View 1 (cartoon, one colour):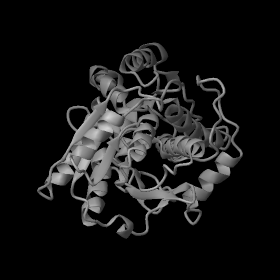
View 2: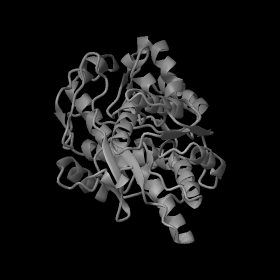
View 3: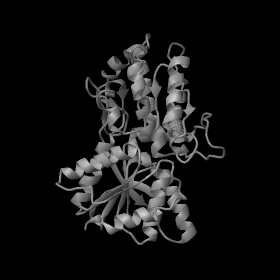
Length: 378
């Protein structure tokens, strides 16, 4: 697993890893003497393509790993896709990365990747559909200037085209932006275009900073983001800023998610996740010193579900786990119940297990499911 464990986006990697390893440790303790345990070897890439590439080459050539799994981010995973093709004779596959980017789902590399989560095209389509239905047709995009941001931008563009609409304005920022960055110039640009909703394709620090600056300039349109943002961390930053300034930065925020809320206790998968995480102390990870793990989060819940699916893959291989068998076994997984209300379904030509997108907004200091979009009707 290569991921950002340090830097401006370090929480993404840490929380994803915590959810994954929490389930795997739970599983490993129960497989019995004839079962196969699963070990994750983490490596920090700081959310940068170069280190991710180096980590991956080392995994393949030095460690002879069973699979690459739970990578974090589009610019990083996109960079290593050619390696999957190059080492085809070694049967190197990418399992359940934390990205919804299209290159991992399309030719020529999609055959080497198995995704659990819905795509960014799924998420941006759902956001646009709901915003347009609420009368918000002048949609702008603020995005990270890399493969991740452009993929999300393209998803918004495609969704708007279905309504004979276009992106009314756009602004971008460079990867690695922190909450301290000033985005007032970018906000003013979108305000000048009279955008009545904004879709952000960013990370928690950049999106929180953009929201802060938009609200400080009196720009009160709905601001929406996608699952990769890490809405829990973004909300923490905005709450802290609200306490410091006395202004509420948490209103009119919309986040698409690819897993249900970890507070939906009526779902057995959520109850299972909460039970395991409540007693999980956490494995060692090359993280920033002083990081305080979240007990529950959307990111760790997704990692947890990926752990269940990884365990299912190995269990189905029986006495002969082999990288060469990954496509055959993954494509045999149909209607797998993870306890989240929708079944996971793979098959030949279908390497994405879930299509479901969940819409959330802030209520009572937490992201909760949106019951009604009328509040944003224009």
